[in-house]
Image (cartoon, rainbow, N blue to C red; front, side, top):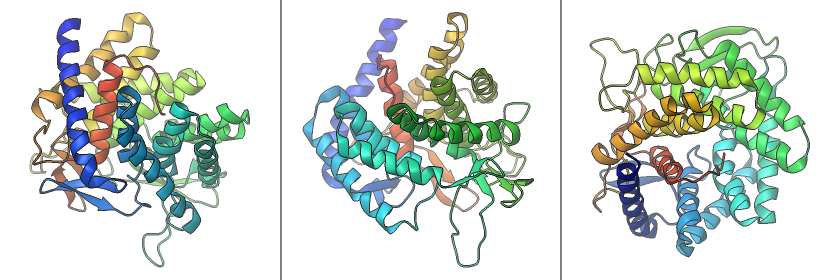
Length: 375
């Protein structure tokens, strides 16, 4: 079994490296999000997915020492400086953006300018913390007159590692305190008893009182958006890894069991785990890739008796993505097909997504034995 795994993982890794050498020539130091008609659409630097392309390049550079990957990733990081300077487009995805650029580069190369950028980003993320509700505010107003000051979303669990890292490198626990307070709010208000997850929870920003849950990118307020489930699974596993707080491990396992139990035969989830019969049944390969990384990490964190339960399921998802959802030909820039971004708004449905590609490659790196995470 180990030899079989090694063979398909190595083949997928080599094909990924070869393809990325080609696609990086066109994409360069820009910020892809979703692939349309075979080409990644490039978004402005402030878009929430801006960290995934350079993060993917850092994953590959770490193993290949391919200088082109490093040069492009470093240029992307420098471009993000303008986002901090302009300020108004910053939101909770500061973590996604600077963890996979500045923290990644600092961990790999020890560069002081990356450390400075990442610490500045961590301070800006801390500034979004609402002390009354104990949550990190998600977004700024999308349009004039909109008030979303009380909105928190499950995605932010993946932004918390930036704060854990900041406490580790500075010795200052205040970053960690905020991360843990937000994670505790997720335990209380986002993760349901069956392991499913709310996407958005709205609080009174003045009193901290919970007001309601919102369906967000899921089918409905009481449904189970699969990528949100993956954010919770991986995010709680990471919070446990950084803090050793058992309640985070328990939550990660609870969500993992729900995720695994609701996988279809090919192990790649639908975009929502609770869909009525007449709802569109799109897959979301990005949710599968993210959850796979969380499951592999979970398998490393639990006792040996439980390890295979999680690790093998993560491997199962990645194997399916590699053999049934991959796009190795040059006609498609994305690595894995059938990602689904936002069904309620009709955006980027059944297309490759850069974060799906990132987690797919991160998962392959983990299966190849890589121990260090940028998170």
